[in-house]
Image 1 (spheres, helix red, strand yellow):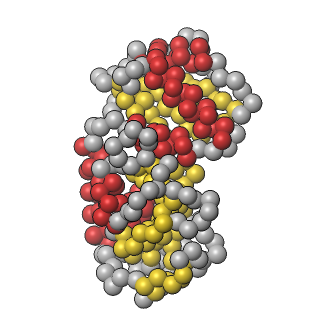
Image 2 (cartoon, rainbow, N blue to C red):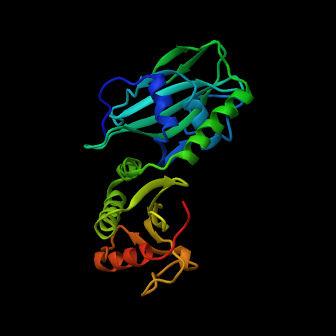
Image 3 (cartoon, one colour):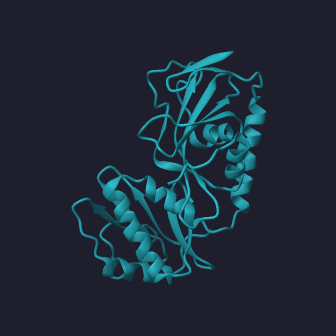
Length: 268
């Protein structure tokens, strides 16, 4: 990851509208119990709150914490009157033309004229508080931009993999490399908060997701693979659960990747 240079409110908005924003694997809402907030105490949501907030930031600061070297923090007024703090990393691949915002957390702050943040002290608030209708318009603009986007999301997938801890990132990297080797023209995207892999005119044929004790490698197609992967409930949900102590059988996974890519998958 790289956080070199400065980041502006306008630049954050541009990245969001270019569909270059993802939710981190371990994204948290209402994560800071040490700060009191009122109307936003419960129910902060990724789609309904984080994205509109990113499109309405009034302040962006570098994260001051030592364990967040690539981190940034943004503040936005919520339509209910309080303030949202959005924590995110700025990911840039070594040969990528643009960056990806990896949102790690969102939390609320109560206050009408100022708020007190544990990392940045007292922050003066803007007088401009959006209406609920304006908040919803931001969300709809973003969803429309996502539907129209047909670019390859390789950087977003790399950002997701990089955000995984330790051995889970290693397993995800192995899976990504196998797919690249077996399907050179693969298209990537982060959908439903997890990476997907697809082929033109064939749809999405594979994905993966990380859980507490395993990484699930999933295959999406309209036929059973041979041999059938050990878990799953149907052809479109065939999967392999990889634990920290497991050794990935790359030859077998490569065979499943080829088979899945050759069969119709999930639509774009």
